[in-house]
Image (cartoon, rainbow, N blue to C red; front, side):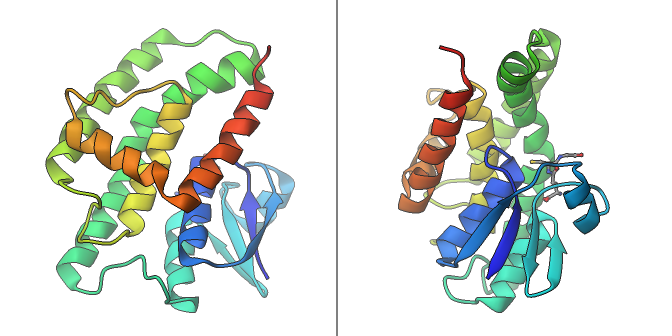
Length: 213
Ligand SMILES: N[C@@H](CCC(=O)N[C@@H](CS)C(=O)NCC(=O)O)C(=O)O
């Protein structure tokens, strides 16, 4: 049985869980925090997620999803033709890096600090994140015209982009549908996919349980 080390509410753990769910693969989640001794034994940078499959240890969400595709090619998450594959990999990379710079501060400042660290939000960090959010949403509004980022089916690009926007929205961020109508529709539709809705409901419940009454 595949074991996924990570936690819910972690963007990159969510990214891999969405890939596993979309591919219909069975797995067990082993709660493991970033930086813990257990994770450090599996990942030299102490990051989550890490996947273990019959003694094969695979760190990094992008590497894990590529591995999953090889061991379980049904319901593919990578386009077959080279230009589309390049576009999907680029958008995955963009989401994991630049878009992440916009989404994480919302979650850190609006959720982690007040709820778990009992510290006030850094409003300047949120202002900086807002500027990056605008840049990313402008770019994605130009790039994404329909229901999927590449072609007519869900790919790793949609999973990476969607996973980041979930973090942003959990941190109270919104996608202004008047300014970015295509992007707002696209993210809304991803969230409504059955496997996404189930996972996000579980995460919302975890967040609600952490909030003071
Ligand atoms: N490129 C890595 C990034 C993983 C990552 O940054 N995970 C976060 C949790 S969502 C983490 O472990 N952060 C702790 C750290 O950066 O030290 C991936 O795609 O898996």
